[in-house]
Image (cartoon, rainbow, N blue to C red):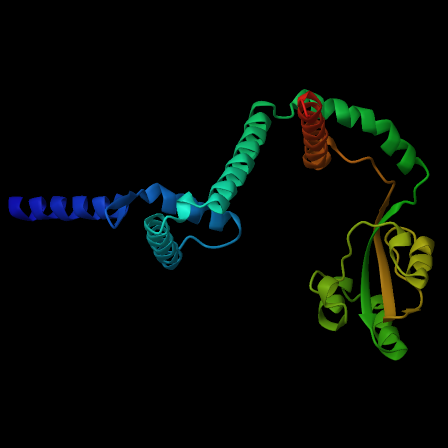
Length: 262
């Protein structure tokens, strides 16, 4: 029993060390953390962190390190063109790091975002004051007037609108959801559909099919509401981004103005 436990402890330790082990290329140690950083960057760009990805990154890193070693042996690192490229790269990396550091230390505050929201509210209120009402509607789209009239007759006999939309609507996107459309102003739709929508009171269905360039529609209005200004939480990300851009622009302009250029 003791021997088994000891063997298990050794094997577990070996696995742990293997996972955390650095890579050595021609005697030069390459930290495992460098692979982790490269994988993290690739994951941030949409790839999945898999053993296959890590092996690919490791192989690429080994080749890159080996090539760099050969370059030093060949004296490439002493060539003027290379030295200039290194200086350009160093300058760019320092500039990027400084900007990132500034952004991390000068994040847009909640107070500033709420102040910007309050500043924009009167503008939004003016915009929505004269705006069209928002309609939450359902529709069934079919190819022929006859089919539309048949479905309309079924609805008048008590058939469920959503069930018919799921089964018969050629608009598969809304059809899957019982023909439901998001809240929208009539002006967002084609003219014939918009005109019919404006005439319908809440809860009613069109008396006759409506023809548009897409086919024949049966329309039902579920709700009508006045347009509202956006809630703070809904526009907070956009406000934050806009303030960050303004702050960064001013920061960069100040840095440029303070530089003594001859």
